[in-house]
Length: 72
Image (cartoon, rainbow, N blue to C red; front, top):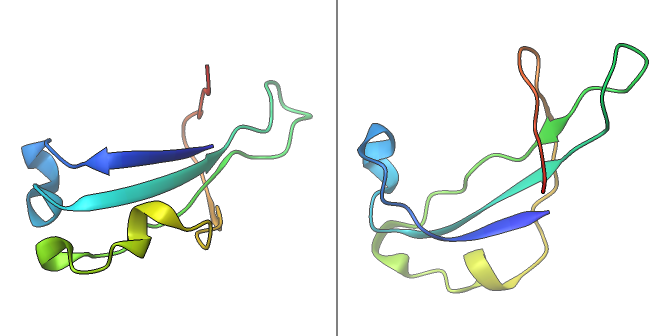
């Protein structure tokens, strides 16, 4: 699932106001399920890269080690 939009949360101060995208992969629940995955968040200073929110090039390539991704 790809989430797109403008970053507003000041805990991510370097990304506030940028158009950006994050991709997540929910692989189910329980100890037998493979770990959930997330992508990185590419920098887009000044919103110059319009492809950030328009393409499907991001892949969830980072393992969620402590926690759980839930897609509803």
